[in-house]
Length: 188
Length: 85
Image (cartoon, rainbow over all chains, first blue to last red; front, side, top):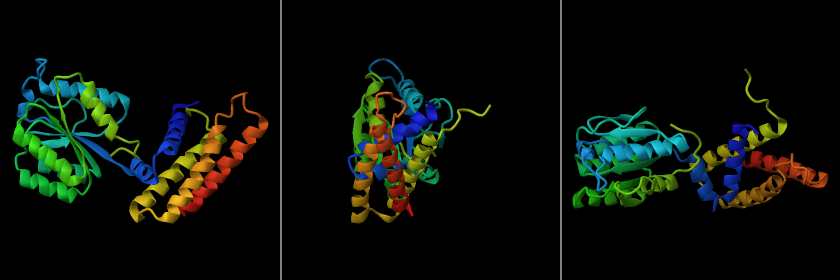
């Protein structure tokens, strides 16, 4: 059996297992974009004495080995990441990142961030314009204000909020992201 | 040069998957009606029969079981076409 046929059969089998028609529709129409923070604070170290950016790179590489997944980054600039996540630089332009995701055609964002946005109000406004769920993974140790913003962003958009420890094995964050992804119709 | 040779069964499954995608997109745009839910349940039942015997290269399936699965696959695809168009 060819890989293509196996993929098709797998897709058809998964749709049989969907809990509801709503879940099926969501699974086939969700276009997810992973938005990762590469602001300057990501140069700090985790409890395992590994830079947060390097731990994040490990997680993203693991996810990409399993399935195609569009990834964009925000820091000194906002844009699609074709190779490695850039070296930490710049602030946290969350509003621009959300608008970028919308412009790319995403209807679901998964944000991984460790800090406060450059401007929380403009970020909330961008989220409202986006209109879809934004799931947020907040990297522990970033501070109470950042955590509060991340939680609010998820809550306001119908997404989920999780605090993760990049000092823990990569599977914690990878597993969390994996659960949020569905087969979708296609990649961006 | 040409990749894997397509088979009728494989192409039917590809059509089924594409029709499911079209159905999902339609519902994502128009919303999910009660009729769509009922029709989906019926389609899932028939599809389950089709897939119970879908690995039809297995020698363990009788000819009757293979025929039942093939018929169910045809009915499932017809049902999907009605859902989509």
